[in-house]
Amino acid sequence: MGTDLDQMQRDWLSRISAAADLAALEAERVAALGRQGAVTRLLKTLGGMTPEERQAEGPRIHALREAVAAALAARKAALEAAELERRLATERLDMTLPVKAGPRGSVHPVSQVMDELAEIFADLGFAVATGPEIEDDWHNFTALNIPASHPARAMHDTFYFEQGQAPSSARHPGESRDLSSSRPAEERQGDSGFRRNDGESEEGAPRRMLLRTHTSPVQIRAMQAHEPPLYVIAPGRTYRSDSDATHTPMFHQVEGLVIDRGITLGHLKWTLETFLKAYFERDDIVLRLRPSYFPFTEPSAEVDVGYHIENGRRVLGGADQWMELLGSGMVHPRVLAHCGLDPDQWQGFAFGCGIDRLAMLKYGMDDLRAFFDGDLRWLRHYGFAALDVPTLSGGVGA
Ligand code: DAH
Image 1 (tube, rainbow, N blue to C red):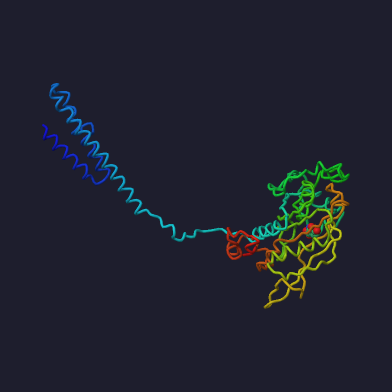
Image 2: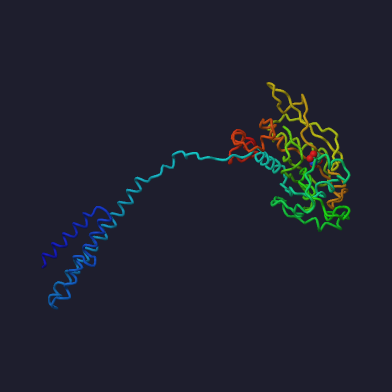
């Protein structure tokens, strides 16, 4: 019996060490230690033995079981380690390989220019303000000193809503998002003696809702929501009933507004010059302020930018010829008063400029309608890489 057990142990150990993989090893385990396994059956014979036989054979049979179990565990660990090695060797990733380029979207030139504007003006200390595109006629016209009978209301070819058709409390989701919170203008009444009027229209009738015709109403909203000093730009969508190669019913403007003490036209000119030099990435940008008229500014100036012709193309810079670029002026005292600000204490300047026009001039597109056609070929040609984040230090248009 003794030599049988020794032989049996040698047999099992060699079978176990010959198991080529985990499945073969499991088969050996079942054959040896399973319920019907050879070693299990041997253990069961102990029950039929006399006490003396059991005393002699018991420890040896148990030792056999232990040796087989230990061999199984050792072989299992070895096979698992080998399997891991194999996978590590075959599934290795070469992190230095170039990534396969998948399909990628691109940033629309209008979004790109808006980012550039925010970046340039952030460097000058301006925050970004927003307002609703569904606006009321008080913010869009009246508060900007455009009275009910004023031809400017018709000039703007406004899209009006039928009474009751538009939500009267329409708000842009990101309204005033980047302005640091300051004392709301509501608390301002009484300080200055100037009452703000944003309740009802002059006659007490409910306000008429419209698609804003310009970004200028954001001036009003910014002054109402925040204490001066105020340095903001407001880029966004605007709407007028107009359509040809240079006009679309929806277009984009950027508004600028500064309210502080002792602000002059000089500050306006310096700010615009600094902005346009950074935007067009040229130091030879020259501006000309031409007297003009806007109801919400006094005095008002149309700003022209100098350009010259190079190889038959119009190139900004120099002062050979002039083209009109934007409207601007000193904020009208009545506009300040409408927002509850005392014009003897606070002055400011404002400007408004077409963003689509800025994009066309810098990136060389000539038909505005293509901006909003949604033609992918146009976007692939004129679009920008999504991670091409503009920074002044890196060159805004780089
Ligand atoms: N809102 C004017 C327009 O749409 C542009 C404009 C002119 C804005 C003069 C201003 C400004 O802030 O001061 O035509």
